[in-house]
Length: 251
Image (cartoon, rainbow, N blue to C red; front, side):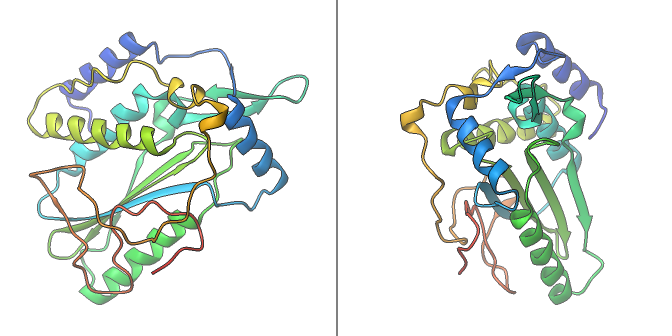
């Protein structure tokens, strides 16, 4: 993550506005407790992994993307939380520093196109199918894989205990806004972000549903309109863009 003055000032502002410094452990919502209990009973469960994958064509400011991700994680503490158990064995949310979530960067641009895409898709599948340890955290992982010909594969996987479909839309909106601001040399401003743990803790028990299993390959609008162009036109074993999937659904 870049350490430019603009980034540092933006993060400091977020900390002041949201109070995202050290905090006391918080209770889980009813929906989060259900997910935690299921994962506690089935440690190998990965059906709650929510993934989105974008293939980006064109120039990409990697430092700005890393900084934008860091800023969103700083704002939303649920993305950097983990579950601890209190004296009675009950689950509690504990917030960790934003530095626990970082953009993983993998450079495959030196490879030929075929081997590069093959390895990129292998890494993508490993990220999507890898289980989260709710006790260790964090509940978000992001990988940017650099491919030949100025192309990138951007994979974001978040555990369902932290987000739902609506909050993922907020995530991408704010990431896009922050990225655009950083690339323009401005301080990001995301007025819609005022709270962090509320994104999930305000789920109503009746509104929670088990994640569906949509096709792994579904196109969608990209998070950076007018900048790197999201595309599903890659050759290779399964180009997948903007795919929100649970395990077992493939095309």
